[in-house]
Length: 277
Image 1: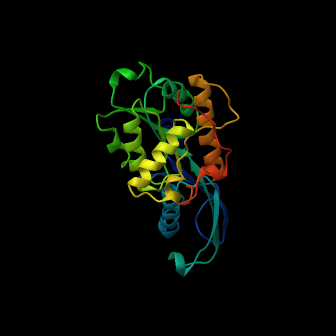
Image 2: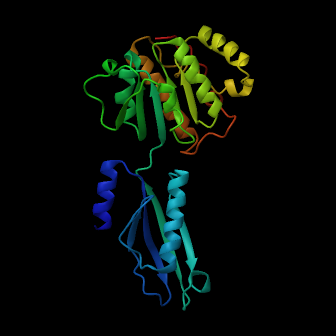
Image 3: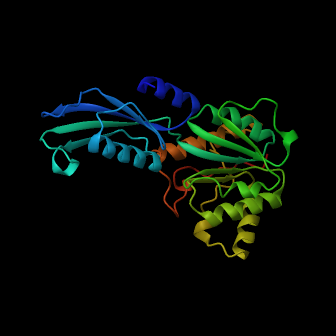
């Protein structure tokens, strides 16, 4: 498969990859400027000439995929003993991440706000899992790019999310919200965690979490109420817009990198007065 066909296929399926291009070639090495290679976590398509240089390029590309970087990268390689070449010269490679989601998001709850939120999140460069134990709460049509997950034990879905994920909790049950919150805070490796509710709900949850031994700085990372306060209104779609805005503000502020442990989006955004929907 050609690199351009592979790239189109991967983008259609939402699989991240890195496009590697020879930008400049100096010396007597038999590589052609403009040659391209597409690298995924498990496969490569096309070639930039093989050998140690291609192997090193593949390593760098896969490191970029693992780190979920959004930034392009230029690397200059001096050809010689370090790359197992018998002749001198240099090659400049351009690494371009493609199809990497800005955020992996788990949304718990298929109620009114969840149904309003899904089309918005689906239109963003995010990978979304929509989780509820109640099959009949989901609409017939699920937005493209959103994975519907029906699980009686919704808490089990937290462990499978990658480091630096975004968690949005808005279930029909306060006790379930509390258990989900405890499990998410126990991980404490998320980029964003929002819990729908009022300031009163937050105070109650903070008290119960302290009783369970959670440190104050860990609990502080929880956004409750969540959503941007400048977006007013109580309609599900208005609340959904404010939540989505906070998600976008978070991944834009960190330029695609996960928020460091102990930091919170609260330092970036004004306090919300969003009440429980």
